[in-house]
Image (cartoon, rainbow, N blue to C red; front, side):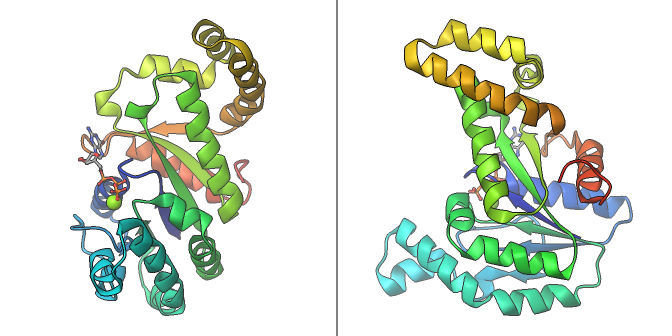
Length: 249
Ligand SMILES: Nc1nc2c(ncn2[C@@H]2O[C@H](COP(=O)(O)OP(=O)(O)OP(=O)(O)O)[C@@H](O)[C@H]2O)c(=O)[nH]1
Ligand SMILES: [Mg+2]
């Protein structure tokens, strides 16, 4: 099974890949790591495949005289050229689980063609699931919650494989309010009415009606990669989502 970690820049992908991988290893599951971020400086795990063996964003910037965004776009196109090599290598891995770390600028991976192509190819090898990371520190208002879950929904639509939500960095959060925002529609609506006005308030109330059934149907896991909490719940939600009889597809 391949687990692809995707989320906005700095949401904690690399740290979670590393710590969750260590945790799985310590419970006798054989894990391989893949780094698909050509912009990464260092990664805290030993990758079995690392895109930086082929190119890095820094090299591309120098060689092609591009800025960081242009170089990252170029890198995604070059990653697409390497995808058949990547897929055949992964096909030969002997491990139970493959954890895939993705680029910091997730929008370039998700919204250009490369990410969807790679995920499609991975899902032909074996079951593939997206873990979508939401940085808990960035959710303070209803609009933050809506924006983050909309991004997750866009990611699910683009990549067409099961996706689970994970709120990260929970060691830095008071969770109660976040739980209420996600699980209690009345609380979310009250906050919208208190904090927003006019057309935006109307829009958000409408939108919350769409979001809530989704949040209710799909559990969200809370983790702290640094402290190492929430890993059992993450494993269980991943298992539910890939299980054909699960209800999360
Ligand atoms: N407090 C806390 N900080 C965390 C946690 N996980 C990650 N961080 C911090 O968040 C920052 C970003 O973490 P990364 O793992 O590099 O995030 P990323 O999504 O891989 O970042 P990019 O690849 O640059 O997009 C680092 O400073 C981490 O130490 C966590 O569970 N708790
Ligand atoms: Mg990273």
